[in-house]
Image 1 (cartoon, helix red, strand yellow):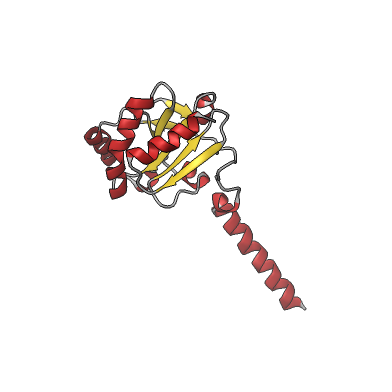
Image 2 (cartoon, one colour):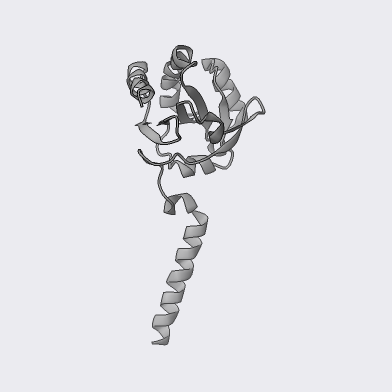
Length: 170
């Protein structure tokens, strides 16, 4: 009986340790129809951006890394989207800086001419909150902060445009 109690205690302690180490894995997942996880991140320009400041306007949140080949393929579509919809939709690119190098981020932004805010997720906390696997992954958030859609993997301009058109009609 004593061994059984010790085994249960050990299981409880291991479970608690795992829960505290990986909170995003045990919390509510970012999913369509749910409130988008809040964030406050510093951008390459030194400004801090919060999810709250975008309320009232649809928001596209693109998660990426400079070493990601599909991210390189997708970048021109994001630039084109920004040019076309910048008055109707906010677009931010969240670099998972915890798994990247700031020099590489700056080079990527320069090479691809990203004109929208590039936010730095230095501890990957925002990526964890959104459960980002794989990259790129893009969330489309409506005016009230509810996740309307999600794109996993590199998307082309036509795919983005179709999703944005639906987002603007919400």
